[in-house]
Image: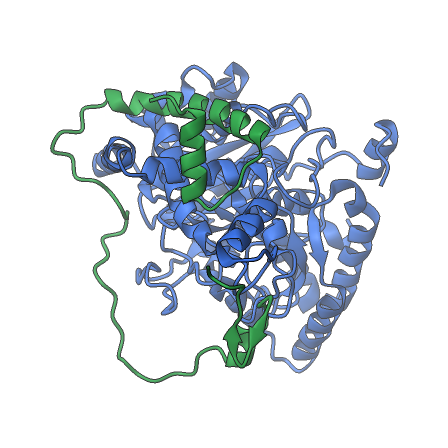
Amino acid sequence: MSLTDLTIRQLSQALDEGATTSLEATEAYLQRIEDIDPIISSYITVTWGNAVEAALASDQRRAKGQKLGVLDGIPMALKDIFCTEGVLTTCASKMLHNYIPPYNATSWKRLQEAGVVLLGKCNMDEFAMGSSTENSAYQVTRNPFDIEYVPGGSSGGSAAALAADLATFTMGTDTGGSVRQPAAYCGVVGLKPTYGRISRFGIIPYASSLDQVGIFSKDTWDCAAVLEKVAGKDEYDSTSATTPVGKYTEACSRGVKGLKIGLPREFMAEGIEKRIITQLHAAAEKLAAQGAEIIDVSLPHTKYALPTYYVLATAEASSNLARYDGVRYGLRVEKDNLNDTFLATRSAGFGNEVKRRIMLGTYVLSSGYYDAYYNKTLQVRTLIKRDYDEIFASGIDCLLTPAAPSTAFKIGEKTDDPLSMYMSDVCTVPINLAGLPGLVVPYGLLDGMPLGLQLIGPAFSEETLFTAGTALEGERLIPPDIIEQAKAKGVTK
Amino acid sequence: MAISLDDVDYVAKLAKLSLAVDEKEDYARKLNSILQYMEQLQDIDTKDILPTTHVLPLENVFREDELREGLSLEKALSNAPDTQDGYFKVPKII
């Protein structure tokens, strides 16, 4: 075991016992980032100096008996969508190539107050739009389990960094599956909490009625420990919920005996690989063997979730991204007058997928199409949400589904076919539309690539998801040696 | 509702994007295939269904109207491409 293999719980214990220091762990990670990340390309920015400073401060707190909690001194990373005061925040876009936020995202501030050490900012699809991290304006991130495959997206850098042991835990955001799908592809735990559970203040917005901060971790307990620190009301985000924060780590050991777990048949329909459905049934049996009751259920509007998502998300994005005008921050391509400056700035600053979504969103909101597309879709969203409300009202505690219709695909395989790329989110988008929590837990390898399963619960039922997730998870999945892979496949740093 | 090249021009104008000629054709093709996929939503009967704009049962959120410190002028302008006398500066409007 090396320091970079450890979970939060293991590293925190080693720090408590004096077996290591935060500085030693931080330096081990920075060394590994230097060695491996030229191949994986999971970080856009590495915060070398700040990391060492934060680690030293943590070690001093421990020495004085002033430890802040289980996260004190733990090296971690953020998706490059979290505003970090004084640290470059690009959202993987040329538009923000020089943006240094003058303030901190609330979730990041809470982690700082818990004593974590920031190693850097992770790669992503530009403005969180994508399912493979290939839409980054800076670099293509590789999947640690096979470096010719994508890590998923949009939080692909955060998922790949964690799977490759380049951080103890990482943070992402999830609008339609951007934490859960890459968690599944990279064999790590990924949580999208209930809409409103974590403050979104300081998160660069994509689609505000769907966006939520999420967590990547090496096991379920770690995920619970991070949620306990970042969840809760924030007066700077009026959509953050006042519902009390749960006892998430405690919930991990409750056991699934008596839990009613639904298997929705629509998540085993055409388009989902057969071998994944086979594993889903095996997982259900594993939970049944521990005393859970497995019940077949139906969510009839599931097939409409993906088109609904792409109408609403693009509509909201076209409005949210109107702020990039070259006036207050970010790129400016200066022309003779203001309108030409807007046009030149936005055309040079945004990548193709971002432009496509702005165009689509502008179209569905334009006069003459607004009712047919946007209003109609808001009504369909009600029907999708109602399916879940009814299932949970009938006494089902949570649902078990695949996290994605397949395992990771090859780099370049879907870049020219947006619709086929969108399909990889078919299992995750309904949960954002309904505002529910979803927890993805790795469930073994299929032909060497990780498989992830998803647990879905009613709003604010994260405790139940941690209970079921702990019962479901096995040994952590370890990717093959990265440097050996690069040699074998002729990939140069 | 197929998107024509004229529609692409019109929407690009609304979205403040300028597209090259070959880009326009590519956008028209890809947007049409996505819109065609979205057409299936028209099959659903949504009569008398209320739209969902927000999933949480939230009402307006208020707080006391107290004076607090915000971002300083210096910080607020720190990322601006051009400033003058404490203002954001832009090229002439017309």
